[in-house]
Length: 224
Image (cartoon, rainbow, N blue to C red; front, side, top):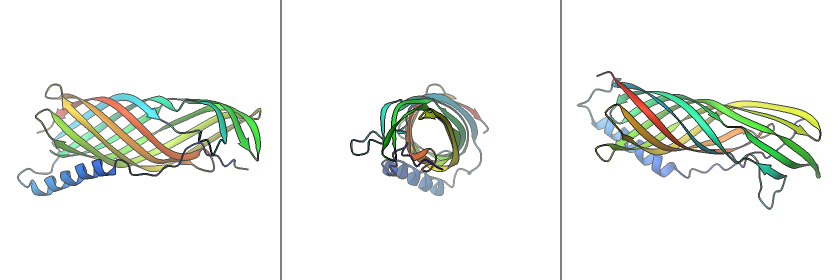
């Protein structure tokens, strides 16, 4: 029998869509109008970094105290990406992200009965994105990201003294925005926010949105 749980706060809101959308539209316009530059692979690059991830696994709203206790809503994140620059304003990236372990310890109300619930949740996955790059100063660029996150969520817990495990996987959209700056010609720094929609499965681990705030270092290998 499946435990229907609200481990994620489902919150499908396009808060960052105007920023990322404007950047992507400007990039597409620039690609269409920039006929003087061929749309071919101009460079490959790698990105490594980490940051802070907001994981709303446990709903603590006053009107829905289904879980009461301690939980790590914010955890560290590490990721690695590789990308191709096929236009001066457009890139394609593939990556892998692993979020830190979110531990929880409290009571979960099941069928009206508060029950001891202690455990941990881990999330990881692969990403594929189109990234728009809009320079606004000599060494700075605005970024907009649209992509997909192929995720897996694993929960191990002791619920009412009984060990349980739940594992789910799926694909969710990614929306992001950021800024990058070149330190030297091929080396630079990127600061970025990403929003992952509806990660998880409601009937198994819960379902909701994840926010990532990251600082990354990138290195470019020019091909032209």
